[in-house]
Length: 380
Image (tube, rainbow, N blue to C red; front, side, top):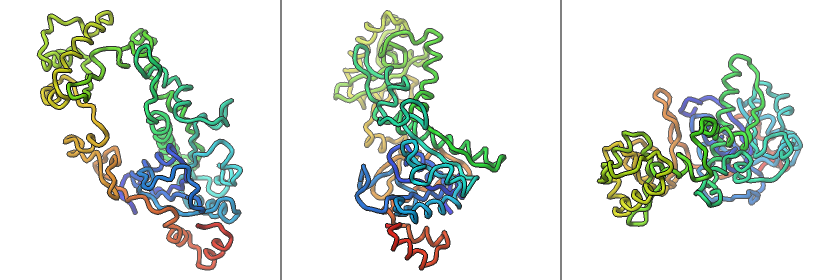
């Protein structure tokens, strides 16, 4: 049994992309036994990454779900599981014969998690889309970017991962907790539009209170305020400045060897253009690491903007073990931290279908039954 707070939890994952695998990575990282149902035919994956950290820490079984025998095998797996995850368009799992009704008929205690871009219903439910589209509809994309410029896609962090996979994992854990009192499973419908919208909750409060009044890139937390922005250094690298509160602003002014009496009030929006010029000119005198060294040990809220490779080597992250090396690839470690039930370092991704025999043995299938499945084309 794996280490971690979810040790003993069994999850069946249908192979998919981005949000569903990320949700299952979180569950697997925290100790759940995740069995990934991969496609039986090699070469069918849309993204055939040679090494994908989103597939770490679980076993994999190759099943042809286009055969009745393959569908029956997935239902048999679900009978002995606590949770089930799929990331198809609405209705696809039902047509395959492994939708919520079919699965719950075999295991009413199971939590059935599904993640889509638009949700299981609504006018756009069947429309194609990607992270950038879901963020746009959620109101999460429009605020991101510089004043007078177009919105900037935040990679696919907010939709696929924050508003998708993490949102689904949270919902599934909530449903699993509820099951402890009701004894019943349920369906968790995680939409990336819903999740991305939830991430913008504070923005509505800022707008209602008049704190957020300007257009994109003209507000306190979107790069509009000079005390909350990034600046280029002499070496072309960047620092992040987040000196909002008075004492933090005072510390920043001291680090930059500026005279506070000569500076505009840092939260006076009318003075922001002039203040930005002053900060940019002063910061540009130093290399990134020189300026970071000057700010070290102060409350100036000035930190380096690191590349992913640099982040993995930073002393703070190194001491906390924020990144780990798995199978020769550096990647983020499981989180958050637990003082009594810490999870172990995940195993590297298994070759797809590599655990088919082991999983079938655990199901209690005898060699003749396994041979019949192979003969029917239900297994890799």
